[in-house]
Image 1 (spheres, rainbow, N blue to C red):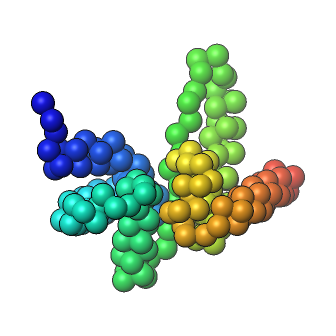
Image 2 (cartoon, rainbow, N blue to C red; image 1 turned 45 degrees about the horizontal axis):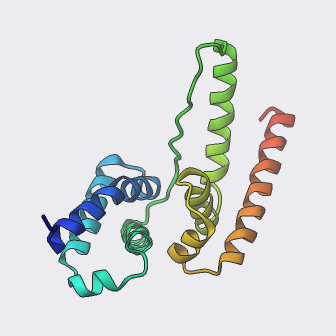
Image 3 (tube, helix red, strand yellow; image 1 turned 90 degrees about the vertical axis):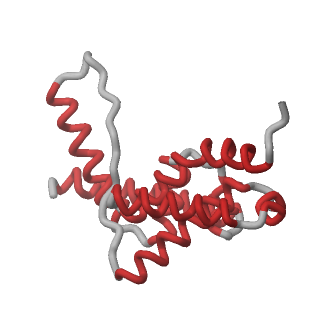
Length: 172
């Protein structure tokens, strides 16, 4: 049985739905807004001419860019700010409660540091470290050269490390 173009699209978009949601959730913060944004992006992709949709080298990169731009437009219209990062800690049974508290505290500080980064740096760290995209995909999503992505990522990592070490040494 051969799949129709619509069924192929639905299968393809289903595999990207979670990624679209995570990027919208990271930008918009509110789960409800992120779900709405994810749905709107998928509907826009669905309504797009199939020939145009199939002409993209990477529908995933296009949809991530579309989701990012949609969220940024939404934020600009509300003049809202991105202010939180949701991190989950995988805990092992052998860790002591004290160690878990320390790790949670450290992750909270890193999240706060990341939240204060400029938008582009925040997006690069999100896409690379949390979403696990490769440099080529990040380059396509953000529309900047791959070498620039690598430079930004290196600088952002150093900035985060420096600020985190300052917090640890000063006990802020």
